Image 1 (tube, one colour):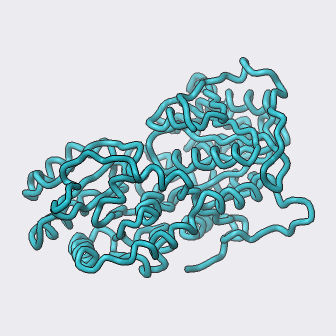
Image 2 (image 1 turned 90 degrees about the vertical axis):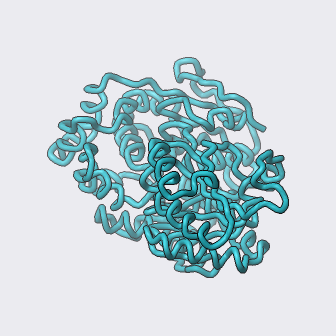
Amino acid sequence: MVRPAVLIRYEQREKGDRPVVDCLDRYAAKHIALFIPSLAGGGVERSTLNLADALVKRGHQVDLVLCRAKGSYLGQVPASVKVIALKAAPWWLGRVRALSADYNHFGTLLLPVLLAYKPSPRLRYLPDLVLYLRHETPDALLSAMTYPNLVALWARCLAEVPTRVVISEHNTLSRQVIQGSKIWNWRWRFLPPVIRRVYPWADSIVAVSNGVADDLSLTASISRERITTVYNPVVTPELQEKLRAPLDHPWFAPGSPPVLLAVGRLVAQKDFPTLLKAFARVRAVRPARLVILGEGKKRTKLEVLARKLGVASDVALPGFMPNPFPYMMRASVFVLSSAWEGLPGVLIEAMACGCPVVSTDCPSGPAEILGGGAYGPLVPVADDAALAKAILSVLETPPDSERLRAQAALFSVDRATDQYLQVLLGPCRGEQPKNTISHERR
């Protein structure tokens, strides 16, 4: 059950106003905060909502703390989750507060925090997050993504509260550093020393795949033993209901040519130009169509490329879809063409819908999801010829749908919630610490 989110400022809440509820799992009911920038239509946001819903169902009080209370998923916040809208401080105050949290290492923070022409806008929400922690003092705070992770740790330090802070990396840090160094966002190249200094303050460091964990360890010189892999809560009980929703699209009518599907933001990371080139090769061999669900700044360039390749009439870009599952259930092949990822949830969701998949072997996640290629072809990044060959192969000989669904079940919300509760709250009394899946190798 969902409803439009009700925004609640911390000043409007009575301190200690917590529900009396019997916890539905082995942990006593706790107050848990989840901190992300917004509810934009991405994988991090969807995973966070899945986790919030699961925690509430287990009897915990959950606050969803947002820098900006906006985004495509705002209307999908579970009814029992409270949304906390932080207030942005003046740009200079956020920088000063970050520096004051670790003034002994002023030099490390100088370039990426103080002198950067455009530092992360997340810093502007640091002062208000400090006030939230002092007022509410949740038992645990889970943050996601690099800059929010830093803000969460600085905020706990400044608030001087006993809240456990768990940070989670959802993407390949080294690729973000390389990509950021090529554009005005050069602060990224100076970020690894900051991460190396601040991340160890966390009670636990989580990565969403072993590849992300290994990369974080190498890029930021953090001991691999400090990083726990917890796969995202992707497959929910509601997924099966959502995929049965009607789909009014003529391309999916019986007898129509096969449809290739991709889902993701129209940005450089997803490398949809390579997908378009691969699709042109497929179309030269057999009839087919391509649907890309998502929105982003590369839309115009993709439309121009589709016309240049002569496939525009068979390519559709309908924009962001809050429920992509009916498309996944009806598509002939789901294609992930990304240059890099963390743990691509859309690949898992497509498998949970029984859709055959093809993916680039990008860092990181696809190889772990697909068992090294046992559940779908893995091809080199940016190789449109190899991608087209793999797509044609899957169209010719589709895999067993039930086998794909069984593999996707490894990424269930229940399994992820168990593991997140252990890193957020610690082992239960009498329970030995669990090594989740941090060192499993597929």
